[in-house]
Length: 437
Image (cartoon, rainbow, N blue to C red):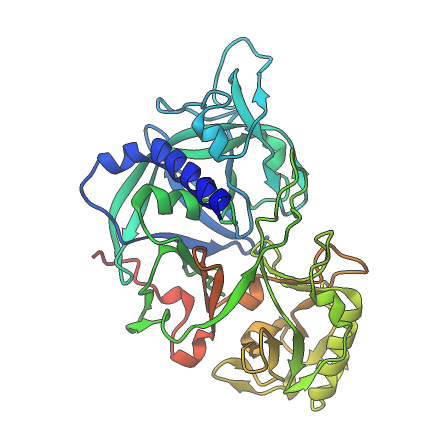
């Protein structure tokens, strides 16, 4: 117990040394912060924008729910009078768990190329590209919110991030300059914003299904109000967040737990019937393999092959009124949509339940989140075959998250989820970004 207390005390002191200058700049303390999120039509990645540097410029990022930290390309087109790199073995390096020093071969120091600083491994989680990059700091601004409207803009004068090289941008959406990590890590955005502004260690994502309307990430507690005045933070269902003791990152300097968010799915039901599958795949083993995680970098849910086959077989049986048709890539199970009706929550197809810690706690997936219209008369099951022996057995992807509120309570290590907001007469694109508090 003493070790745990001293550990927390140490990091509290480190956070205060790094972040306290930003608190002293203003007497205004936001209760929560908000970032708008858009969906890229070409890549299906979820994008956000943060104003950074001096003078401030908008920088576009791909949102990475399980990402370790914020990383951005610095070695070109990065101009800022407030950019700094913390010295090796300094408090920011300790906070970032970055014990190794970085020296740049160029004679002229510049952003992304400084001597005697610490380095980390920025990870493009879309394609697994990872390489050294120096820990860095610069000004960033973000909008506060009262949960109903955007509020005043507040600043962090020394927001920590990692500089990356241009090749890290491979497969990211056009115009993106890095990835915004929200994972279980001391220098992810939720941790840094919580410490900077003394807001609760919670954040929530609400992803829009439209490529023409904004969703949101909220940092801090609710309310999270969508038009027409619906507080979507009420009536959440809660389940524990599970810590995978083995990192899921591409590369690491030292062994450490995963920064991804795992939940304990115990079984899968379709129309109330249990899908027969190897339930051992639903647990995380000593090597960190198995289990269920939530991801914003996978556009659709990915299932281990035996789970996928059993799942598709059971779903097809329950959807007996619609015949199977030829598959349309990247999906494996497609149907004649002229035989599928519609409901307030999307296509009238079998309900999918991810059963969690008990039989009465489940995440229900309705047609809007299970089906994808690929042609005028063809609809496909928006789940994909992840192959044999994947690292994670079930990866819940973006399509299944859209128009669902997910609140990640880091202090209590639990996930609150709403299921489809369509039943509450609203969507994740209904936050009022146009008027200010």
